[in-house]
Image 1: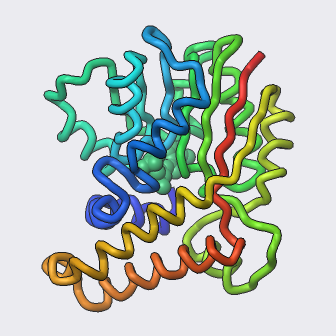
Image 2 (image 1 turned 45 degrees about the vertical axis):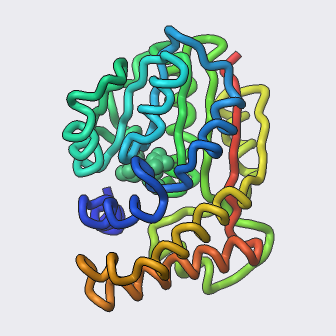
Image 3 (image 1 turned 90 degrees about the vertical axis):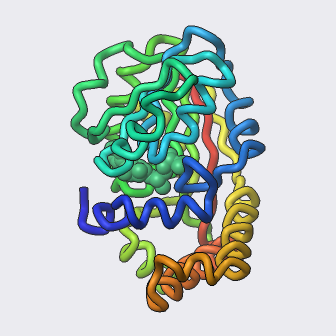
Length: 257
Ligand SMILES: C[S@@+](CC[C@H](N)C(=O)[O-])C[C@H]1O[C@@H](n2cnc3c(N)ncnc32)[C@H](O)[C@@H]1O
């Protein structure tokens, strides 16, 4: 992983962000958002799901609990899978395993080994070429009639040097949503449906900012003033970029024929 990702997905920083997004999440974590995403797929007992970039495992647990699917949560950050293994070792929810590994190199992607690839807010860390390679591999790893659900950060049509510079600093490779369709099509996927759900991102970010402001004293118990200010600044920047149409939260569903 890059130095930016090592820092962002260290235990300390990930747990800090989780307090703003919701338990088990590093992105919009409400049950209502999850339910709307899951409704885009045909999920049923017995299917096997690979969650790429599973983070703190919120979706893995919900997928297994609500649909009876078997889930493998794959994440490149050892702190993220480490937290999941500690938290869920004795969970009553069965059928979830967590593995540390990079989707670019993992041996998990045997041909035709999963029914569903689920991945949330992970792809912006990959360059366009990496996205193309990864979606080629993931296509092979799906069984025929396999399903895909993606949420990801994309860039809007507007241009802003400030936005480009900050995304670079955050290690994000932004592309237009339409480019995603081209990459998935080239990898062999069909039935691609793309939606702009920036509204869900904004609602989640606004709730997080409200918590930061109203519970400042609580946050300050384990943050320095500079860390608190940085976190608030990051939230304000993301909210501003989403409102200005620079940052788009994209949802894609697709199928392997
Ligand atoms: C924004 S977090 C999202 C986590 C989770 N999907 C969620 O929605 O809460 C992105 C996650 O993707 C993981 N990730 C990024 N690149 C990866 C890669 N190449 N292979 C596996 N995991 C990766 C990061 O370590 C991080 O946990």
